[in-house]
Image 1 (cartoon, one colour):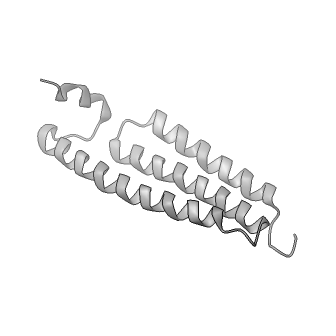
Image 2: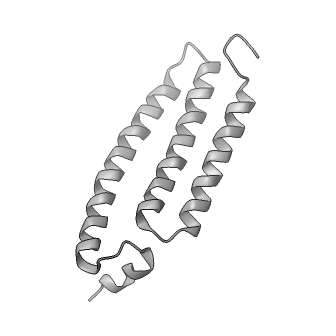
Length: 105
């Protein structure tokens, strides 16, 4: 363990595992809410990678700035995604993504 905490490889392995879990959760599950949570997990794993690399380069704050923008985009994605899910639930009384193709008329 270095003076900065754990070495960068451990952060990258954790981030890769979280991203893989998010990808699997998005591809396997058909519940739109679970898919949104899986996307959030993938975005958070990218944030972990950016902040871990930023810890290696202490004079540069680019990793933290990018992580901040990813958090802002994720918040906007949740707001829009939940609005779409609520509208879909009111229309079909279901949140399964398999039934979303029936929205076209």
